[in-house]
Structures are given as structure tokens and as C-alpha cells.
Picture: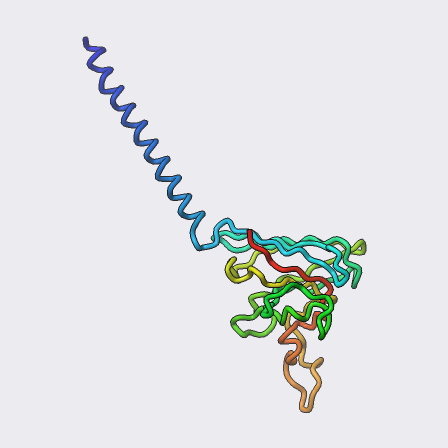
Length: 208
């Protein structure tokens, strides 16, 4: 009799504990679902396939975003300009909202406009400025960086451009700037482009 009386509350307690665990699990699943589906950009991805002026696929740039920022992964294979050196890499405005044009009037891929710079800052602080890519003698290169400068809604349909030369990020000593009188610091071209030179590969960001 005594064991029966003692056993009943324990059984009830176990049932209550089980019900509480199930409720907590359901609540947690709902919370996770609401975060992953939020407008904050959690879990979004985008990819730009890079092609040279001959239409050859030479790499891709992948964007993986969450609440902590955006991971940018770059892989190229087959770059034949300026091997064993750094190449500027930027998101461009692509105001024309068209594909990369290797035969654009002003030069390959110039139809995608200048660097994406919604805040109108000098180069190095453009929202579209990315770390330069080191391309090895065999034409390959990889890079990984993290940025908090943009969300998925910002870059879908924009162009990623790989340049022929290195990017100085606007850091030009005054002794290099010509003029009468000499201008202190970077000139207008450097402030706009980082002097990275021509455009050798282009790809449009497509969001998943």
C-alpha cells in the first residue's frame, strides 16, 4: 500500500516533465524557424560565376550571409593576365541591370558601371570594395573574407569584377600626385577606382 501511494506521484511527475520537454522543443523549433526566415538575411546565399572577355568560365564568387555578416569565398582558375600578383575585386553598381558585356563600347565589362558606392565615399570605403585576390603562376587563386557592408537585398543582380592590376585602396602618398600646386593625397581617379586597371572577368550575383 505504501509503495503504491509513493509510486503514483512519481509517475505523475514524470508525465508532467515529459510534457514540459515536448512543449519546450516545439517552442524552440518555432523560434528557430522565425529567425531563419526573417528579413535579417540569415542563411542566404549568392553566387557570381566569373567569365573572361572570351566567355570562358574562370571562377566564381560565393556569398554566404547570416546575422554576423557575409562570408565571401573566391575561387579562380584560368586567369592569364598578371599572373603571380594581386588583382582588385569589387562589386559594381550595374545600374544598366544587364549581363556582363565583354564588348562594351568603353572597354570590356564597362557596361556594369563603377564601383557600388551607395554612401558616396572614397575608394577603400565603398560598400562594394573587397580584398584583393592573389593569383598564382598557374592562374589559380582563392580568398576568403567576412564583411558587414551589405545584405542580400543589396547585391542581387550586381556585378563582381576582377581587375587586371592590384588595388591600392586609395592609399597614394602625396609625392605621387602631380599637379600645380601638388595635391595632397590620392587624386580623383584613385579615390574612385583604386587604380586597379582594366576589367578581366565579370559575373552577376544570383541569390538562392
